[in-house]
Image 1 (tube, one colour):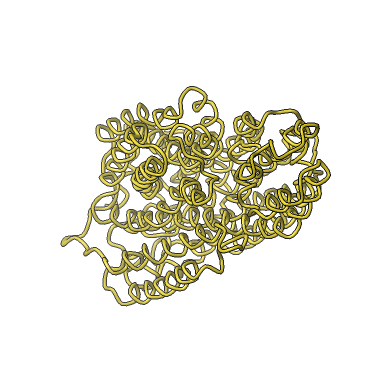
Image 2: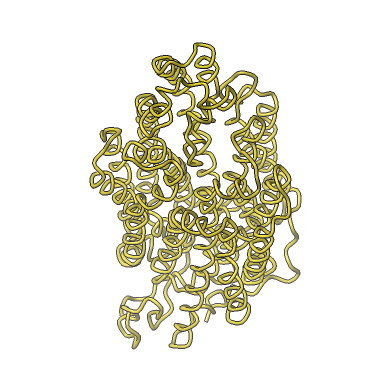
Length: 625
């Protein structure tokens, strides 16, 4: 048996171990993804609990870092932690990640401070939580790939990817429900799962990847530093760019933002130079010579950019316009927005495992490309919806969006992981996650900027005219309409009546004539003012998202069929037919070693460090021609 294929020994015992691996890693990535979105809906009670107004001048940064910090850290660290898994043991890093994530969850729920210090406590421990989540995310796909044979990986990675996608949307509902009990419950929910998962992982998981070379590969410290600081600088600039700066609606003219962008790009260019010269680089750039690996990651990046902004745009559409105009109180809109987005989660849950199973049989390219066609078509459908849509039409379109995303995620991940040599699966999994997390962070910056730019051009005049029509003095109306649109958008996300927030510096509703206060503070005044400018911004955002989906589909279509490594002969199909184990059971493998299994041998004829050509592993996920 080839050394790298020890994880795919045939028999009932190994089938049981695969179930353990799939269950544990699925719970881990679900928990990690859930925590990326659970605070989004729970932020109003969280900030009330620490007695901080996040919309007050100077406090918007706390709000942005609560939203973006977790994803930024994950985007920066997953490649390095994936490489550490390749060097020191994937299960070892993964298990440590479970423990770190759980410990951070405990510390988050015991915030001893109020105000800004309380917010910094939460942001700091969220960063540590993201470090633990990065350890889990970076190594889970590699552990699954080690444990499952090539002809079963699509199903396993499909379940895993669906858990990650579902976690993002389930977190919206869970955050709203748990925050009703206590804001600390948002963090408590991870503790029992984390404790059980950590003990289970330490007891049952074992290293099944190829034996590591002796002496152990050196850590590429310069590569780690240039990549981490460079990507962190770029994503930090995106976060800071959303904040108002010296009378501008956004901060893209801020010298600090410009400096971070330039410095980050320079460091990422330096990272490429370091990796080309280092004998044992953090990331072998030669992997990008594999068409399946490169096309899959580019497609994943495009989808993440399209999908990441979708979540926030939908929340603002529902919370800022649709729900208030249907009579929901602003305080209740965060929870109901999560509930009304459940068809999106259902679509992902339905399509993900099925597409993973089908990709094992028919190949990744056709299924993933079709998924992107459905994904893009759903955005076109959302573009033609009126602002006050009929919910069943909205539900069908977002369900289609989830189905398209689910159809793409599992086959694409399986194709990427099957295109790399066994000893580089950890860092390859980390790079895959980096493309996804960076895409999500970038999408928030790009789509928010597009929306804010559109609102800045139209909303102030609409708000000024609307307030004047309700008897508000010209001075107060002019001051309220001059405030940055970003504060109005975040007010809707936080479930705050935007008009009350805008008028707060001038005495709140006391600045409104008594005869008009009910109208101005009601459910319909601000949503009707916002609807026109916001819908114009939505058309741009959804149009860009549809284009990105088509780009991802084209990239997926061009991935090609991945050949087996030269010199490796395929095992006749009859060998599979002779297996006594049922092919219908995704946890049991065919009775003979496949060419894909042979190509993962630890001898590493499938790839070299430092940019040498990579001979990808042929997998069942890449059979489509």
